[in-house]
Length: 76
Image (cartoon, rainbow, N blue to C red; front, side, top):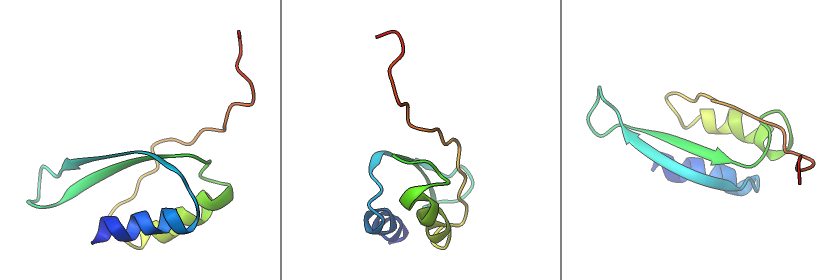
């Protein structure tokens, strides 16, 4: 149920998910860690609103990286 609630937050803010992965916890049965890649910068747009709301549905949430979108392709 928690995963569906989190995914719904991304949907409501129109944040595009590009990858979802999961790994079982090594310490607790039936507990999983989810890894999500999405479009957007953590400090702008819909994603700035998504992060605080998603935290309400998670025991732990870490942002592993956030990068600005490239404006041009170098060397092309």
